[in-house]
Length: 202
Image 1 (cartoon, rainbow, N blue to C red):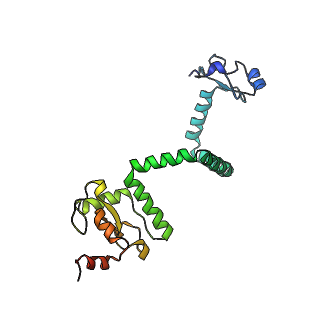
Image 2 (spheres, one colour):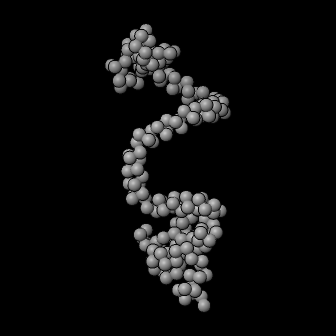
Image 3 (spheres, helix red, strand yellow):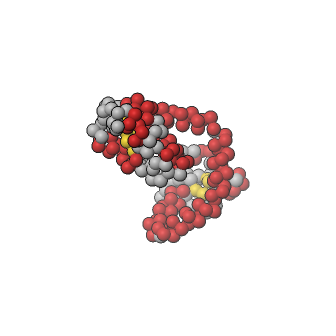
């Protein structure tokens, strides 16, 4: 494979060393027939190095995993520092991307918010988007309290039966799907108190 930017690279290894370039491009095939740039360090073409890496993974998968783990932990602080620096430099862009993502994925965003709130309160359990979808179907696409259709995304809210504020868990057994009106009315009330309030219990 011919390098796309080969014209910008030195043509010999000596020239690459002189210019401090990590690669050079001779335009000639290597011993294995690849026409690709070569690394200045070992004079091996990039495609040959790729093949060597692929063969190593096939022959020594556990050794490769051990090497990757060692590299990860040896460079973790450097990568974290880079991440913090990058985030600081691109904070406004990240906020815009996050805002756009939330607009395009309202249910997923709400799901993530529930997980965060539950974690913050130390609530037990968790639930997935698939479990929510199954619960909506189990409820026959109707609000638990008033029977209003919850087929459309904008017509349903995910509610903790026993509110997190009152010690409720965050697993699917403590979840119900309500219409926005019922959910806003129930808020963080105890389920028995709310049922009495709307006349389901006396």
